[in-house]
Amino acid sequence: MKKTHLIGIVLIGVAIVMLTFAADDMSSFSTFTYAALNADEKVKVIGELAKDKEIYYNPVKDPNYFSFYMKDPEGIEKKVVLLAAKPQDFERSEQIVLTGQMKGGEFIASDMLMKCPSKYKDEEIYIKGEQTAAM
Image (cartoon, helix red, strand yellow):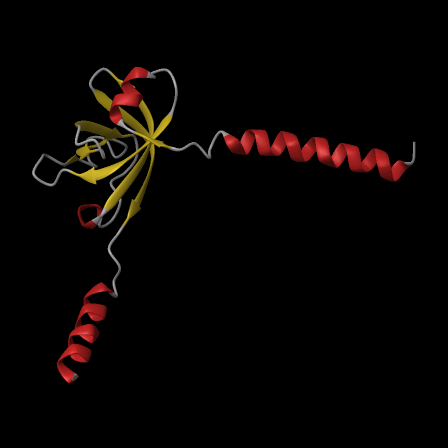
């Protein structure tokens, strides 16, 4: 067997191993119901901030404890505990993606991504309004 064939086989093996590890992070989004049924595995839950409920963050007492309530696509609302600092402009988020596990009645999140409103959204509405008025 030639060295180039051997190197090719090794590279393909390495690529397969890397894709296997990457597949763990490419999971689809789930709901709080699924997270409760599979409490032993990490899941990604997508939802919206429940703005009428309490948001708690006291950096003096514990800078890595932030709690709030979130509603998933099924309409189920749960308390979320993020084991990190409160993100800037959190209240303005349109959508939240959490990675974590259900423990008891709470979702314990280790990671969070937010979709914030576009800073150009108001400007876009204003420009569309001008174009409509000009016609």
